Amino acid sequence: SSVQKRKREEEEPIEYSESDLENSKKIKEFNEIHRPKSLLEEHSEKYLKSKKWKDDDVRNRPFDREKDVLGPRRMDSRKRQEILDNAKELSSKFYHGKHGSFL
Image 1: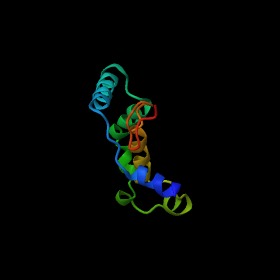
Image 2: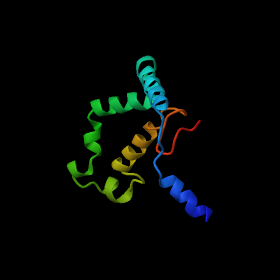
Image 3: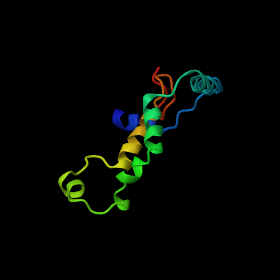
Image 4: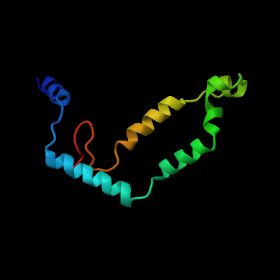
């Protein structure tokens, strides 16, 4: 059926030509040189330098009723970092992701 065919097509790895990979590499190098850091990257670096991330780790602080019982987080730090890492993969609409480029 068409659903099974679609699943097989999604599972097959995409083979990129050498010119596609070369163009992708050139675009990435250009962006690293000529484009400024994103606000996300700037704020992440600032956050890591401020040492506040150590306070957010539940294992390193004593039990606090306000934080631990009354105010549950919808997203823990690992899940948040995973989402941010996945978003970084989508650096542009021409980027080759897991399922090919957007355009």
